[in-house]
Image (tube, rainbow, N blue to C red):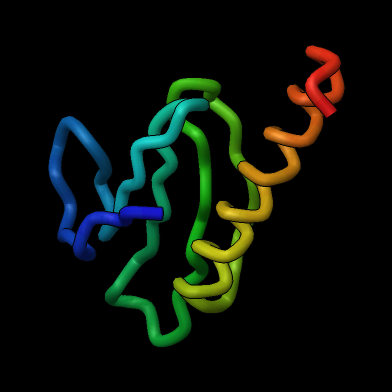
Length: 83
């Protein structure tokens, strides 16, 4: 997955530090508050307005995002009779 480099807040994207990955299901975004000593990394799919969870580490959130997409691929393949 191709995540953007971490960026600071941008008014039209996020009011928090964030990284973005464009996917077939929509824009995935991980957001966190860098001013906190131990920030949570919140993962969501913006186009679906779907919050997926909070994680202790950025890499953990990225791995969950990947597994989420793999699961959706499997579900769609089964639904379409591809498997």
